[in-house]
Image (cartoon, rainbow, N blue to C red; front, side, top):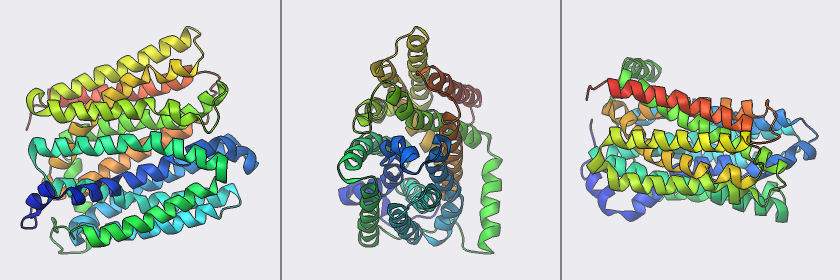
Length: 402
């Protein structure tokens, strides 16, 4: 893989560059979760069924994943920075459109466009990590990114809920529009263009399809992607279902963030542990520990629900284990995904991102189709997704190829 001279050294010694990359990659998740507390009220505000409201979440997630398939190979071909800036422009305009929406159809359309723009932030930033770092250092940086991403849902839901109650739900989208402008300026001034890791020969569409065909022939890549998709589906089911379950326990928009915080906070701790353990314990063992903790947390949550314990803490506390498990599991999985074929890091990040968001969108939409008088149905859904990831990891352990 070609890389710009001095790129790795620059990344290793420039905290501002690393902070810029972290902020760019976090923007998509922030945009996804900032308005979650408002979803409790949109049904009444727009006089529409809850299933339609869930489409504001699922529509965002589908676009967020699908457009990564386009941005990833284009960033391999033309450089990271121009593609990132294009996405930020789209995300900013969509945020303004959402703030001005006066019906659920317009809001859904704005969220889809917003997801399409934010997709560039995720796929380009992941690709930059592949460009700048190698080996255990790459996994360690992925863990730092995980810490930053772990802060987004709790902070976003806390801030979003307070903004909703005090100033109205539209202010959350105004805030996102302003952030898009700030990040656009930061990308323009502070990020390198990035090396073209794929040759700019032939038609771009043919090159893109060729890259994806190459990746789909790699069994290890597919297994890594399956693990990522399963963990994302589990987490998004939680994000979409927790506000509904917590509402049944008497928790309003301004209190949801305190309970949703359980998973992301422990996820940050899990990422921190990964950054310290990965060099000594190795990828396979750290991932196995993550699977055990994930499944254990969900089993405890289900046991409490089936036993008749109907409180918000009975949902939040067991899921501390899930967040810790995902924090151990995701960084080595992400590093493995973009490292199978380094020259196609952008395309690899795009495929992984698409599958994550498609499964996440499906999980978020399914949540709206199932009754949630308690946490049992949500728990069964999350456990099912997690078991898929465990099976994929079993397959990965059987495949000993480097």
